[in-house]
Length: 112
Length: 112
Image (cartoon, rainbow over all chains, first blue to last red; front, side):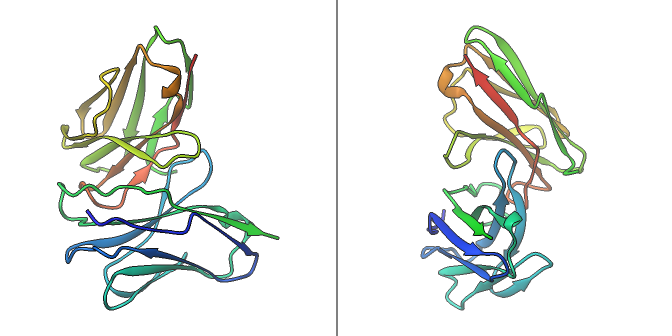
């Protein structure tokens, strides 16, 4: 089970691009990287998932270097509503015996 | 509409009460999960079911008893709870264990 390390909190301003980096030094060959977003008193919501290089969807981009020991979630032009906790998870999504655990996440606070 | 519903949304109970939390998913998924989230703490995985079979039990006290009668429904039966059990209880489902999880809105439980 690959352990992840993220900054506890970050502040940014509306309209800025925000990059949240997650470290996972012992990531395994079959592990994928998944990011979730959670607003207060709500369940987490899937944002993006990737294995290597770059993945982009309508919400975010995920950058994964060649060694896969870290990943960066990029949120373009954030707004106040992007204030939330962001979780980085690493695990083998095709192995039902692999526990994919939520860590403490990064508390992102967007300022006007 | 997340496709995962939970009832009740709020529950207040005494330590001697017996109550049940209900989760229903309308996504045709095979895996369902119970999580506990206490104030300012990470999500704690409690139970995982795959095709009505419990595949994960993370050392949860016996006062929490899960039940999965079919792949669309998941219950968490509560009895003789403690005040420290007060938390947000989240249900999630995924196509298979390890895949992207879809979370319900949660049940806010207060134990007096």
